Image (cartoon, rainbow, N blue to C red):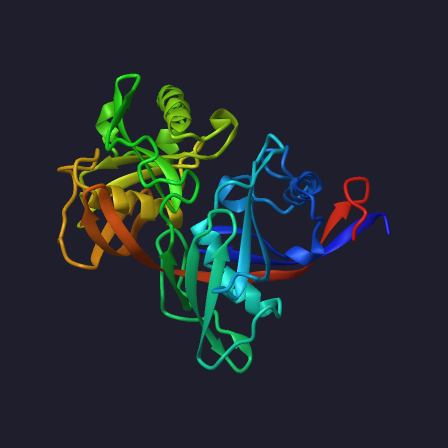
Length: 363
């Protein structure tokens, strides 16, 4: 055989999509693994024409699963963000939308057995150390994908996957506020640098001369904004202690504006060189935490209920996403116990993805 066959599931997880793989079917060393994933996705072409990617950062994501040695977890979830065009792989972040499919994929791969009408899967997010409980709808035949749950950014309805995120503070930088400040200023732009589920740099849309209600397409066409935003992101990322910011997808960037459709606040999320068409699950947790923390850039913008736990409704470019946050206020910000979201997932295909043997000859 002139190519190496790797078994895979092709799944939609939340508003993202990509291959889900058994970690034991892949090379151990990161350099070879990166080359395998680049070939798998087809990075290096805007349409990923020579791979199974989709030409957008939400469709060039990879989930690698294994049975966990973690004392709490059932499944280890190792995530990789493959670039669309420049043939790079970032192993630093995680992805909460792709995580929506980890429970179903673990059952489909035989890494954990289905149990009754709902199977609880305890997931260790290897990249950040977070713990996540996923509740997956199941039957005697395996995973149930049909259901009445809907999420903005995905057509139709499907079975709900309830996610509860824990241990999400400081996963990348070691601190809730990596710079030690509630507000920092870079190039005259006030930002809050925060690390909850995903390290982020957060600003008000008005600081860039934007309303915050622009479409994803309009923002992507605004090269002047992206240039200004990237300059701030790189400086802020360095202040957060993140290395090689210019070549990394972290920290991500977010904009805030007053809500206008009944939510808590309007948001736009950047991946970071393109506008996210909806909202990242990890980014939603960080943005919600910013809204809940007094004296950040979100101060005075949000419609708050001040309940415990509190539902934060983030309006995004394609609709809304709800985050149920269990927290307490502290002198340093908030004590985040957990964040809950409901997503959906669907198995799209299964089989073997082929890797040229000159890249990897197999195990």
